[in-house]
Length: 88
Image 1: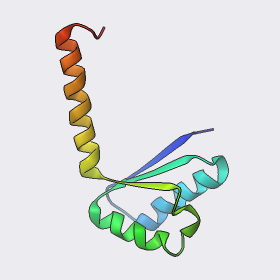
Image 2: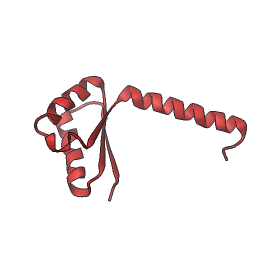
Image 3: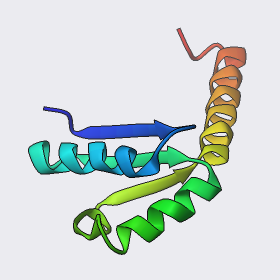
Image 4: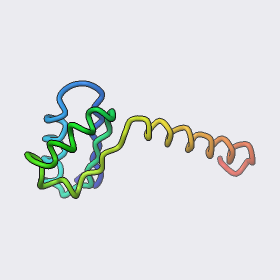
């Protein structure tokens, strides 16, 4: 059973993305994450106030730019550790 479920929504219907996440939450009580653009996050927040209100306090909405920033920071940290010779 998945503990963490991510839906990356770059194009398409935000409604169906939320439906998939709600299904995962209902089945497995998973921690659910929606990764999307700011515009789609705004749409998702609107849907979470109505149709998907059951998961409003359980879902984490993440802007695509934040994922890119996370990747860059983690890579920089890994590269630094590698330079120091403490990563195998």
